[in-house]
Length: 279
Image (tube, rainbow, N blue to C red; front, side, top):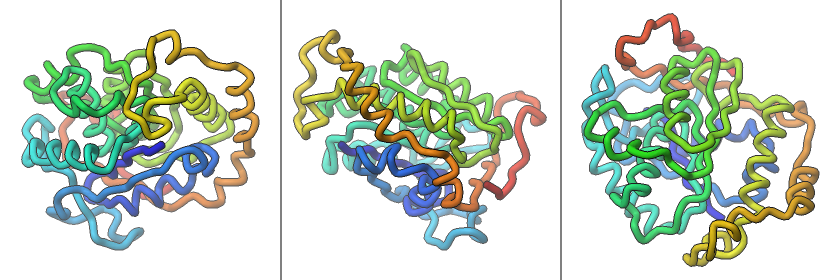
């Protein structure tokens, strides 16, 4: 099973891979192949991770300070659709910041029949500090209806995108929201958050037999079959993966990804945490 992982603004696929290394491998690495492509464009300016991670750095598209006008977005979407078609099928999507925002857009567009019509439905979406696009012409399509893909959203108390991340979560049907006390970063996971994520993944793995999980394109025959879960097998997966958070906290990477120069509408800047480089 494959997950496409999209990095944040002016970082790289390797940096996102490094960010996620602070999570215990039993969460994703034991179950999925994670694909980390670089953004379509080289960084058009200074990267805020220059002091903590080596270049090159990339961005997926460019935008104005109000995040309502975008440059190279259509080209980016076209590139990602080709990548998914040629490298897939993918079981799910994962993204941080700009990457999460793009993932959600692809899911919304696919739900409305705008892109990836031949690709099997995505079974999962992991959003870390994601947000919604703000161009009305995009919103009217991508977020027209609640997105049905099973999703988990990591929202930081000090994240400058805290409120936009909550707005994105509300665009999905029955999202799991995991809150953490950190800022704009891939967070360390405490024991409670780790257990939540283990259960969420187990619920996806157990019923997903056949179809894309076995490399096939056939969809499961019915909603009942798709949602049928063997409780004993779910418990087995959770118990097998249960670990002490202290085992992986020592592996965390020092990083916090940059605050982009965006005015989130008329929101009071006090709603957002400062842009720190920490863990």
